[in-house]
Image (cartoon, rainbow, N blue to C red; front, side):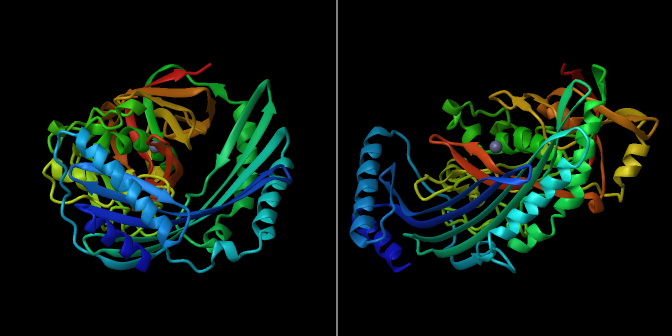
Length: 478
Ligand SMILES: [Zn+2]
């Protein structure tokens, strides 16, 4: 931390209005298996320091993987030089929303460090899952993937904040692919990725789920095609994680809203004139951003601007109520404070506004999934994520899924195939007429959310209870 303090003091003495330095260690172990063999093991250790400086009204960023003071000072000089040039080219004033000084440490609560576990242990678990999948009739492929991450950061800025964080992430997933009846279909099992220790992987119950997804992949090959037309959908939490990610999470990033991501096809219909008055969903819909959620993939204590992680509503009782916002844009748009969701993936990346943990709050009654299905005369229950598409304004969207089940007279009657649905994002959320209760709440999440130029992959948790959407246009995809 002393080196970082020295560097931010150095930049301040050279005339910086604001500067920070971030030592950022990114460690990742990825194991891929195919059937009953290891396909690939990837180990990455990407360590370095990034320095960011505001000079006049220009920003500069530079980084180095070297740790000595001469290299850090050289990176600071480069960032200052860039900021001075940027200052000459800009015609608007930069101010930062106020943030208290933080002297703090934050760490993921873990019992077992994933990197201390012998690599043969997770490999054996993944291969066992592959063997179970391959035993099922008509299965032609089993795949699995385990990602273990550790991100350690030290952060110092010219406002006196000194923050250390130590984050662990675990993601495991398995796939079964069947070929039968002239079809090839896959089924996926993705226990929610978590900021957690290796003990979380031990509890993911790959074996039981391997058998289930293998049978369902086969069943999918014999499913009948869906009928095209408007229908009722019940969507499971994992499926909803993708719809909320694309149709609420991204459009509520304020940099997109204001046009800063336009060159990366990243605009938003959720403009600031709609804040606190636009009907984004039915009054049942509460979409909560929460970077304080324990074990959430974006729960990092403090973000890469030194802002404390927070909880707020993006949609409250159906109304657009908030954004994800960095310090500069918070001040520009007269908001009192940034909300702790500016992150960089690696030391060489500039921190940008990233999606927070975002979940659909459970319904207020203790409605179960079974009761919701029993209450639905006709429709489709969709599990998991499939293909998707959404336009640059985040309005016109299309989603598939991983498994589709026909509902007739309140009962699941069998599997369907080739289901996709189309909707306008806010019309979709407005059509939500039931959300199951808290006991049905499940998490899901992403570790590969792409944004920025150069592209950065960020991670965040989502969550939901199963929810029902009326009058959604379903199309037969084939
Ligand atoms: Zn994304």
